[in-house]
Structures are given as structure tokens and as C-alpha cells.
Image 1 (cartoon, each protein chain N blue to C red):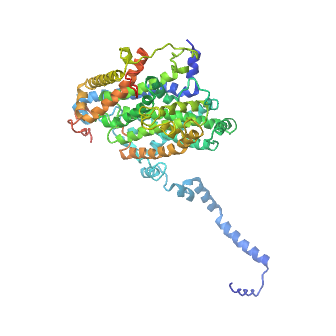
Image 2: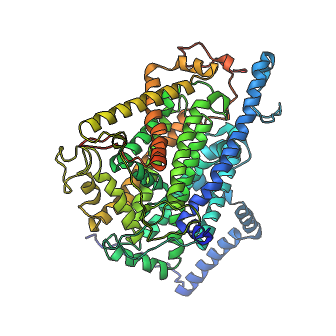
Image 3: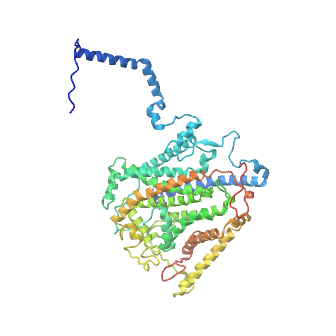
Length: 318
Length: 311
């Protein structure tokens, strides 16, 4: 405990409390008046007209946005969402007729599907009996629930189409050639995962359509050589309906509650995680392999080096 | 002609993507090949005129001398990306407002759907089940297709045609891919439009009759030639499969040796690359359509019959 401070001695001519408060308020008002004089307020409003000058804006965006080359480059390079882009690209590389834009659209659809998928997860229980009821609830009672489900469904179909078209363009332009071979292989894995994402989502409404599609699909697994109980050499390898690869996929010997849970986890967590990692690799390699492949200057047959060397002589201008 | 039946299939919400693909694939093929033909013309012109080849900028597009080679991503690429996302979003909204995702009855293991069809992009696999046993159609073939796609860049020894559309410089690579792609799309179209209840073949416009009884005897090739007992069935089948490999390999070789240019490319191809290419060409690109035709035209079920597996 601190010792009590001795009280300040009162001034000789005592002033009433009310007077002191009045005096103090006067002082404060004077201070505000000078601060809030017309010119000052005007200047502040002028500043607000250009939000890029505010502290708030600067704290978020870090760099000024001006139509100067430096500012434009920094706008891309210092932004976490845009940093996968280079600052500058080949003039022809923005031509839609060359790229078809399908890779980017596929990625955008992946984002849309993640977004709608998360919203759908709020209304869905991966358990037998409840799952179908949840879909009915979603379709009939949840505001915009039907739209949400439709967007997830059609977005998935669209993503399969755009993935195929992306691959088709890469083949037609020879974009898989050195040094992009590995990125092509990553792309093939991503295509497979896209199809598997679609397939695992098919069972989740737990309706007749999904049930029988998954039954047909996993029955094929039953016939895997060595790993399925009905496949060639499956029996010899010790496979039964209770330990083969189909059992591992379904979590049982029939399509039931465990299968629903497993496809839910594959669909919502496991495959999207793997896809995200591979997407990062895929985009990173696009940059590291020298950006998108073209449109490159055409090469001539007469410029091919003799067999034994895979390189082409430098093209004109190089 | 039962137009109603055809309309029912084509307007099934889940089949819309296939109908869309019927337009999208021709459109994008046209878009790509149009540029390929233009580039091929330029290449021919430059090959004929070495002087021009030294100075030409080598693109078919107009080029102003004062243009910079590069553009800023902000705003020239980002505005395209932004526009693309807007358009895709609008398409998706319109599609989702006008068409509802299908929802059937609750799942019931005791009531089999007939026909029970996989999602459209897997219909190729399901259709393959008609021609091969499940272990080939469902496991071996998909694996071969995926590995075949992955090794594609590693067996293509052609250094030309990297980063621009061309047909004449890459006939074999593009041709091989197109054959596979076309087979895949064909299987999907068959699976969608021509398979009805019981996976029976119905021509487009034919009514799906649930009571159709097919009198169709599928025979094994060994039985056709009068070999009915093991192990001769297996041995005969192995010989036929071996002959198929030899013949398909020979035809493939002839096809990739047709032009002087192709021979030059073959010189650059290592033996390993060549053999891997041949393997996938025979097992995927040849075997699938040939088995399909053998089944559809001659009602042949198996070529090789052994006690353990059938092909």
C-alpha cells in the first residue's frame, strides 16, 4: 500500500467548479474551432476524394497505382493473389485465339466449386438417411439452396469440359515439349483428379442415380488384377470381398454408410487438398519453364540440327 | 423415327454437357486448325525463300515495327482474366437458374436403375465394358490411357512445332492424339445416345423398349474356327493376340514412315521412345476400335480364352 498523498493546497482565491469547467470547455472549443476551420475541413474532404492517399488505403495496397511501368509492375508483383503472374508478358500471349483461356477458366471454376462446396457443406450430413433429407431441405427450404446446388453441379460439368479443352489446346500447340514435359504430366494427374472429384461427389446426394453409378464404378475395382477378388489372379493373391481394393474404397463390401462417409471425405478434403498442392506446382512450373509456350515464332525444317541433337538452331532474330 | 425419345435423351439436364461438346469440340478444332493452316502456309513460304526467313518475324499476325515486344500484365492480361471470370459466372448463373440438377428417388439397393448410367465423362469406360472384361475396361485400359498421356511428351522426339499451331510439322503426334480423343468421344456418344435399358443398342430416334429381347449369340474366336478345348483355346488366342500386335505394329510403323520428314524424326527417336510409342499405339489406339468393330460386326466376344482371364 502506498502512503496517501498529501492533498494539494487550495489556491488562495477559490474558483467555483462550474467556472473551471466553463473555462476548460471554452479552451477545448477554441482548439476544435481552429482545427475545424473551413480550410482545414476542405483539405480533408479533398483528401477523401482520392482514397488512394488515405492511410487506410496505403496500409492495404502498399504501392501507389499509377499508369507508370514501375507502378504497374509493382501492382502485380506485390500482390499475393497476382504474384503468380509475371510483370510483363509477350504481346501475343494475351491472344484469346491462341490460349483459348481454358486453363485460367478451369482454375476459376475450381474456386467457384470450392466456394459453393463450402456453403453446401453447412447443410449436409454425410450419413445414410439424413443425406437425402438434407438435399431435399436444401432444394426446398434453404434460401437460394437450389441455385447453390445447381451451380455446384453444372460448375463441375463445365470444369471437366474446360480441362479437356485446355489439354486439347496444349496438344495442338505442342506446348508439352521441352522443357514443359513434366508440367504436362502434372496436368494429366490434375485431369484424373478432376474426374475423381466429380465421381466422388456423385454419391453424396445418396439418390438412385449416384448409388448405382458408384455401384457400377466400384464393381470395376472388384475386377482389378491381383487386387480385386473377382479379377485375374485375385483369388490366388488371397483377395476376398472383405479385404480387396473395393472394400478399401467403400469401407465395406456394399455401398452403404461407410462408402458415403469415405466419398464425402475424399470429395471435400482429401482430393481438393491434393489438387491445391498440384495446382501450385502446375502454375509455378508454367512460370519456371518460361511462361506460356507461345505463340512462338515458327521453326523451319531446314533449321533442325542433325539427328542426335534434339535442339533446333536459333530462329531468326535470336 | 421417335423424335420424342431422342429429345428426352438430349434434353436430360445431365446430358447438356455432351450436347454442348458436340458444338464446342468442332468449334475449337476449327479455331486451332485455322491457325495451323495459316502457320503451315507461312512455313512453306519461308522454306522456299531463305532470304525472307532471315528477316521475317515468323508469325502470321500483323506486327507493327514500333510495337513493344511485351505488355504489362496489369492491365492488359488482368482485364482479360477479369472479363473471362465475369462471362463464366454469367453462363453458370443462367445455366443454374434455367436447369435443375437431377435428383432421383432415395437410393435403394433393391431397385436397380435401368439403364444405370455413369456420369457422362465416364460413359466411355462404361461402354468399354461391353467390349472387354471389367478388369481391362475398368482398370487396365484407364491406367494405360493415363500413363500413355503422361509419356506423350517423352516419346515425341519432334523438335518442331513447340508453341505454335501447326499440322504439317506434327501430323503423327497430333494425329495419334486425335484418334484417341475421337475414340473416347465416340464411346461417350454411343453410351449416351445409343444405349437404352439393359445396355441394349438403340439407334438415335428408336424407342427405348424395356421388353426388348435380343437374340444375339456372342461367340469366342477360337470356337469360330473349331477349337473348343483347353489349352488349345488359350494357345490359339495367344497366337492371335501376338499376330495382332505384329500387324498393328507393322501398320503403325508404315504410317509413321510415310514421309521423308517423318523418317528424319524417326532418326532422332531412340529405340526406347519408339517401342513405348508402339506399345501405347497398339494397346490403346488400335486395340480399342478393333475390338469394338469385332464385337459389333462379327459378334466376337473373346479372342483369347484361358482358365484365368479372357481377352
